[in-house]
Amino acid sequence: MCCERAGAASTHLYGDTGPFAAQGCFYRVGAGSDGKSMQPIPYWRLSSFYLFYFALLGSTAPFLALYFDHLGFSPARIGELVAIPMLMRCIAPNLWGWLGDRTGQRLLIVRLGALSTLATFALIFFGKSYAWLALVMALHAFFWHAVLPQFEVITLAHLHGQTARYSQVRLWGSIGFILTVVGLGRLFEWLSLDIYPAALVTIMAGIVAASLWVPNAQPVEQGERSGAGGFVQQLRAPGVIAFYACVALMQLSHGPYYTFLTLHLEHLGYSRSAIGLLWALGVVAEVLMFMVMSRLFARFSVQRVLLVSFLLAALRWLLLGNLAHEPAVLIFAQLLHAATFGCFHAASIAFVQASFGARQQGQGQALYAALSGTGGALGALYSGYSWKLLGPTFTFGMASAAALAAAVIIALCSQPTRTRP
Image (cartoon, rainbow, N blue to C red; front, side, top):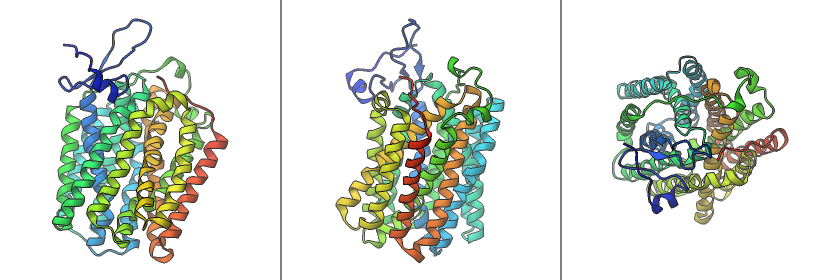
């Protein structure tokens, strides 16, 4: 049975596309002038997966380095352990992306990847040595990074090419991040960090359950991409390689943020509860940005959105490296997460979707994940080695320079790309 359209409240919240709790779907409003019926989209099923997936990120980005510090590792060893999952992100997505494009079994890959992530991370209960933790980080990341690129293709297929609507589903990932980072921040003030692995395993079980609830969908080749050639030929189109270079630089610039921000703020005297709220503040700003991204894309090209994201990232890292002891400045820097992640990620997904045909979507998303991992790993490694030797100011200064370099590249080497309304 078809779902009825949502009322004015959900229309206001989601633009012109409202969710339906009862049936777990929403309609694609304004399906076109051809008079075709509107197609239901499994809004809540897709959203639940993003909720749990990014809840896991919310439990690792702020707290993984803190847990390793709790175990007694040095900043250099912490940087290496945090870098390992990012290095696996350089390898795994391309393998799984090729397999997904070749077989079309993307949802199966998502489900097996989620289950294998849970099984391999559970090995952490058997040892806490550096070598054992490095093995656990590598194994679980190999499967974890198989999941999201393939799920992004499934989501976009359900959206029927309306890329601007992607952010309305993805915002639930940000909500999952917020709930986890605030909840764990308070939990770790009441209890020992020794419960951290159990918390991660619980969230990973939620990812597995959500993956079983999601229906499959296959991308449909759009007419404008027909005859565009293979993946390599599409990759060589003007501005595409420059975009991927910018992705790597942007993620490199996030290295100190994801690896040492929590430890940095603890050293400045902030409580773990306050640090959790500050992480959550950034993601709240991200959620609000996701809710208006379709309007931004209606006015500005993807490249313009990316350029502003890179410039604001350069500013943000300078503020965190020099003025994080000032609460007002720190709050402003966290609000900039709306641009440095929200705008950047939504624009990147839109760029990849517009740059590759249906049969190359998995590889395009996988390359985005792989170069994000390359940049993130390099960022974690350099920050791990420079943090104690050169200090937070210099480390965040290098991050600012990387984001500024991405801004220069996107300004000089790209052509305007518009999303589909």
